[in-house]
Image 1 (cartoon, helix red, strand yellow):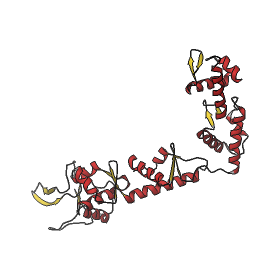
Image 2 (cartoon, helix red, strand yellow):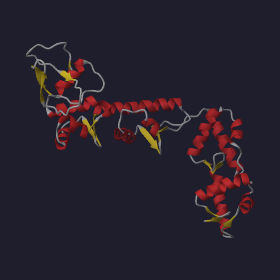
Image 3 (cartoon, one colour):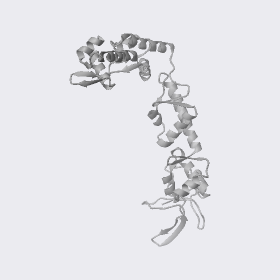
Image 4 (spheres, one colour):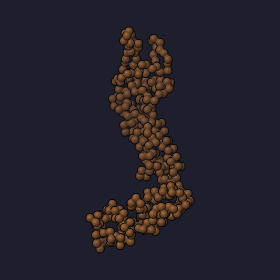
Length: 323
């Protein structure tokens, strides 16, 4: 079928923009000519020239579509800019443009070089207004996140990436890198935050953080159950858990097992103790470890397994060797 763009009918001799809707795919390039014929009775209906072989996936208003079709009939630079701009935030790869124009890779790259508004990101081409829009959304998304999560140091990078499903990974990474280089955004490991933003604590939250840290510091290796410490705080369980996460992130607390957290100072003292004991004997069994540390089996087994993972000790049968 034939769908006219912006017109209801076309008179003999007139020229209009139209979209051919074919029953089967056919390989066409801009500039290819075609004739429409009716088989019975045999009649020539009309003819035309292919302008675009990949129409927009989303329906656009006729005026916008006609403006685009006129633009891609201009100079090579005008045509290339129009195609990349129409792709918006998704951009177009060099392969996309070769397929949609029939140009060689060299022609595409040479033409692109004359258009200041187009940026190349890996294999993608994207116009500057689209990049600016992505950066603005990046800032807005982080601003909303900080407002809703005052006790979280930043937004996970992959979680942030999920807010841009229409943007390629390469383009997203370029925008994020540009925001970091420009001093607008800070990146710490996998956490992203706006510059100068991060954890904001109320008085009772700051007090609770001090209580949590002090409870584990003074406990040494005989740490209390987390639920017992949390029960004595003036804040709810949810906020308390976020503060624990902060202490873990800053390595003030260290998770030795699923249920046991220790203050880093206690673990540092434990390392020093084992270094001193190695001079006497490098062999270490559970009984000797319990005598050295004064802890019960409840703490001894998880601590020894932690020391194995940290390569402070190595398990050999039922004993350990202090490395």
